[in-house]
Amino acid sequence: MPEHPSDVPPAIEATGLTKSYGDQQVLRGVDLTVPRGAVHALLGPNGAGKTTAVRILATLSTADAGTARVAGHDIRTARSQVRRAISLTGQFAAVDEMQTGTENLRMMTRLARHSRATARTRAAELLDRFGLTDAADRLVKTYSGGMRRRLDLAASLVGDPEVIFLDEPTTGLDPRSRAALWDVVRELSARGTTVFLTTQYLEEADRLADRVAVLDKGALVAEGTPAELKRRVAGHRLDLVLADPASYLRLASRATFSDPGTRTLGIPTDGSAAHIRALLDELDPTRTAISSFSVHTATLDDVFLELTRSPAAEQAHV
Ligand SMILES: Nc1ncnc2c1ncn2[C@@H]1O[C@H](COP(=O)(O)OP(=O)(O)O)[C@@H](O)[C@H]1O
Ligand SMILES: [Mg+2]
Image 1 (cartoon, rainbow, N blue to C red):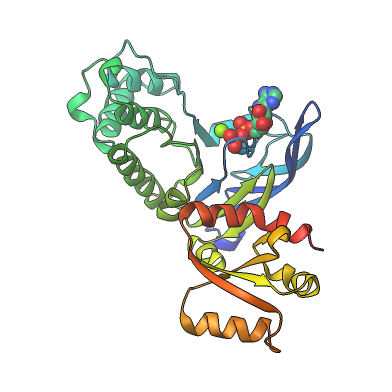
Image 2 (image 1 turned 180 degrees about the horizontal axis):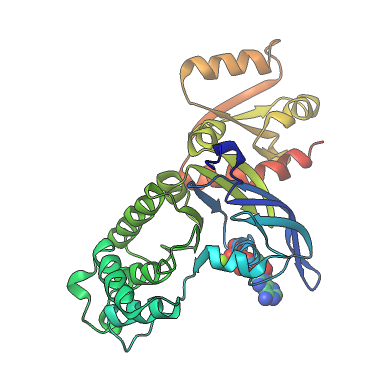
C-alpha cells in the first residue's frame, strides 16, 4: 500500500530535550524536526551542546527529559530500531589505520551481517563514490585527513542508514578536503538519506543545509533556512547611539546588539540607503531619539554573534 508523503514521519522529531552533567545544564529543552531526505545543520560554537544532542539522538546517551523519534522510532523505547536505522560519524571514527581502505570497508560490511560477495562489491562501490579508488589498496595510515574522513563516512554507510549523523565532519580539514566532503554530503542527500550534521561554521551550514538550527549554551536561538537566517541577520547592522535612556529602552526590543554603557543599539539592516532611511524614520519619527549612527558590514562571525546573542540582548531589556 503506497504511503502518502504526509503519513511518513519526519526523520527526526525531538521535543524538549534536556540534559545536565552535574549542575551544568548542557541542553535546555531542544525541539527539532527534520524531514526525511533533508540536510539539517545544528550550528553552534564549541561547548554549545551539539555533540550531546547528537549522542542522545543516536541513543549513545540518554536525555534527562524530553522525547525524540528518529526514523519513526522512540529513542527511549526502541533503541535498537533507532540504531539499525542510523549511522554516526564523529571526529574520531572506527577505521583501522593498519588496514587498507578496501579491507576496512569489507570488514565493516561483513560486520553489518552481509555476505562476503556483497562486502566485496559494496566496498568497491563506496570507494568509487568517495573518490578513494586510487587509494583503495593503501594502508589508511598513509591517507590524508580528508581521505580519512571520507573513508569514515563511507564506513558509516555500509548498512544503508536512513539517517546519518555527522558530528563536525569537516573540523580540522583543509578547504579542498572540506569541499570534497561537502560534495559527498550533497550526494547522500540527493539519494534520499537524511543528513543531520553539526558544525561551527556558518558557511558550511549555508552551503549544505536545507535548514539550520542555531544552538547556543544548550538552547536553540534561531531556526530556519539559510536564506531566512541571512535575511534575519540582514548582513549589516545599523548602530544607533540613543540620545537618552528612555529612547534606549523604547527601542531595545528591536536590537540584536546592545551596549547600555554607550547607549548603543544595533539593528539588522540590508545596508541599503532606502532601508536605513526608512529605519531611522520609523524608529525616530520625531528626530530626537537618535544622536548618531553607523553602519557595519556583518562578517560571518558577526552574523553568528548576532544569532547567538540576540535572545540574551532581548532578555536583558524585557
Ligand atoms: N560526559 C560529560 N561529562 C561532563 N560534561 C560534559 C560531558 N559531555 C559534555 N560535557 C559538557 O557539556 C557541554 C557541551 O558539550 P558538547 O555537547 O560536547 O558541545 P559541542 O559539541 O557543541 O562542542 C560542554 O561544556 C562540555 O564540557
Ligand atoms: Mg562536539
